[in-house]
Image (cartoon, rainbow, N blue to C red):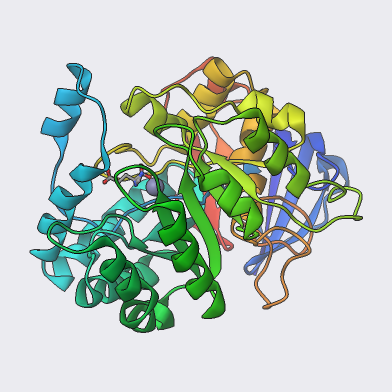
Length: 401
Ligand SMILES: N=CN[C@@H](CCC(=O)O)C(=O)O
Ligand SMILES: [Zn+2]
């Protein structure tokens, strides 16, 4: 069954040539994109939709969320708005609420959050464990996550639970807990920050998880300059996320990891994932996205949806903030929220060794993940911030909104 979507005023492909087509059309067939080009050249299809002069872009790829949780931390948020600063300790509050919640309710809550994200144009989504923090509850979170998200990350190393010895807990994360989550996850992550895990503990976790066949990523440099970025680059992590406080050496290390990549002469590097909604909600300085891009670093934008630091799954909000406050162009911000997320998850074009279709860009053969805006161009995402601009969504070729 094929569908022609025509009368597209602006088609932002985010493909390798960065093409933006005017008066365009797309044909999707099953879960894949069959054809892209000028509306006047479009082939016939079984079905047709007139986009009415609207803009189309790839569905958002949200490469960093924490959706498997229960409970509410609005009091912590209010205290922060009154001047308190964020610290990792709040994670324990969510851990308690999450452990007390049944499988059924935890699944229902996570599914509801995914549905909210999809209704706003997100078509590919990663989520993490990290609110279980013992073997039983981390495995349960990983299992539930694997039923609701496209990609699952093991974040047993989110916080050392109260009363536990940090090194003994790290051993648990690298041993029995890793074995228990392994069937459900593709990635591992560690919160490498003061109050969470030291560089040495983080290295141990990342190496053990890599040895177990997982891809790795790091929460780093969120609350101050720290070892997270350097560790991520050294170990070849797919991404380092937050990146608020960076030394010149950190920026250089990230840029160096991408040298030669675009010309095909170098290997992939470590994506810097900026989380602007989190930065606003924690009153941290926004990550230096402009500086990173100018240095040659590949950037992702993600929501970091979680109850502590960023209780929103709105990628449009992240894009608007990146344009209005981080000095990215609209094209750069949309690219970071689509192609950049795919790059951070090793799901971009040309990286489909396991048979999955590429996401995050629109080209023939890629997964049919399309986001139709109720606007004639993507610039309206920043020009009309906060407006409900999602008009239609296709996720793997299925109309999701
Ligand atoms: N920084 C570490 N983890 C989450 C916050 C978790 C929480 O406070 O519940 C984050 O990415 O911001
Ligand atoms: Zn996070």
